Image (cartoon, rainbow, N blue to C red; front, side, top):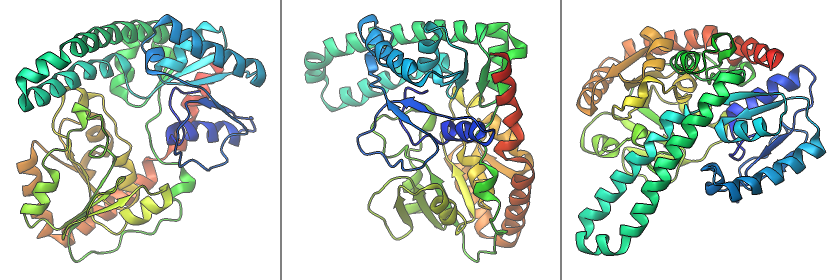
Length: 381
């Protein structure tokens, strides 16, 4: 169960784990108008209209979703619910069903982004027209600030309730360590990083030598209307446009390509890996943010399996800890450019790094290596 819609590869990987053990797996989650989902992972999919106000825990809207989910539960009659993220987990906790809480985001920290995003939005609008902004948006600003403070309080309380009482799965050791303290529940917190499944990558060939440097960024961050402060890639395009650092391919959204920046649009997973393998460096070019101590983006491990050497901001602690010497970090965009320039002039060395990270990924960065943690969580729920 999730408040979000399919496709969601972490949700599906957990479902495949259960299916491979002979269990029937159904999904209940939000609808998506133009879904790209056409896989047969679930025996049945139930649609639930998760509204923003329900996610804030506002009683009328929360109860509306609760009625929908109660109907789903009465029909599906699950023995266990794998509740992805805080909203579905809190909902299932009220229905008194056996469940595990799979936390993708560390929601008490994630809620703090709302305030940061609001301040950034206000600053941008204010610079456009200070007087008009004040008159037109003052009431909306006050209302949003109240909602944001409410979300921080509610999500933090829910999170503590859940990790104190429920087997909890999360994506990084850093989040897990916090949860063990918050919930005083050390033996019921499990880590399952977002590594690819074995069947996705088992037939990949070792990376071939590339004579010219080309880099990849995978993600929809530059296209999304909501800009999260921990995924700030401002200046990335200008850097490649203004400096001779090879080509950049962006996977995940469409825009007008230039002489050295190309957009692929959305790709399914196998086409994504195929595109990645044509390049040499996988970028995680986020500007430093306090939340990176906990952030563990799955693109780092997709890059590794595609034979891309990973270049990421130094603040991404989980990525540094997992990839070890198989990634190169930078402090800011100037240092990132400098390191790309170095790699551009040392393609033999880069190819050797790509071979090493490819082998390391095949030996270590596999979903199935952590599947036991999911099953252990199921056993104690």
